[in-house]
Length: 338
Image 1: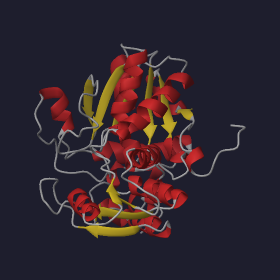
Image 2: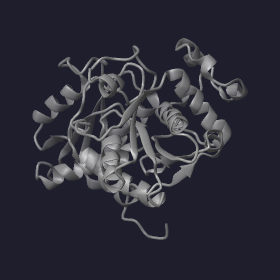
Image 3: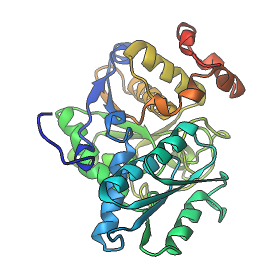
């Protein structure tokens, strides 16, 4: 807290662990949330972005003046844009055209070449990840950082997020839960925590439309639900980052619970975060209720709601998604946009 850091790179990580007082009182547990929205690029993905770039530098494939290419739903792209600006690389981002306008605008302001493409399944050759890989292969001195299957992603959390949580709780952590897109945050943090404390419970939190809930429970890749308003989480496959992660259980969190929690966190805690964070905290409450009073459950606050506010706080958007009724009645004055 009292040191001089070296540029953007030196400020990644070491985020606070926040006790959520209202939910802790409600459950009789300590519900703790890692404030990843306080990373310099605004999200948990700053950690992975830094590590995947360093991975390509270390293996010699990324040279001075080179181009970093990634397929991302937004936050990894923003982290990469910051890292590339700090290190002098060009940044090209392919992303599904379903993502929030705030993310696209942020990427462009940061100097990234943003290429929105139709949102199609991973099995489709026009999927944004495949387009990113193809562009990198055809561009001199360019690398595809491959955030989904480059295990430097989970290494970031094994070396930083996990140790931070363990130190901040003095080892008094009974469960860790969060959603996963690439798998890096959950896997890397889980691997470290399990190494330090084998009986810590690792619970994957999954949104509608993802296969991971069924994968954990029944070892099948079948979707639960048809889709989610959350961005950047949920999966249709098991990524290399998630492969072999020590997961004990999974919970399925419907959008109605995620949205309700976004508003509860703002109203009760003064914390302004996006829907994936709402899902994570809803999952933490569910895990705490299952464990019973007296336990400590840790989760991740991924990013700020400022990247989604034209959606999450819009009456017309919420109505269109059938989610206005998810907003608690005493929070409806917070729906500030038409």
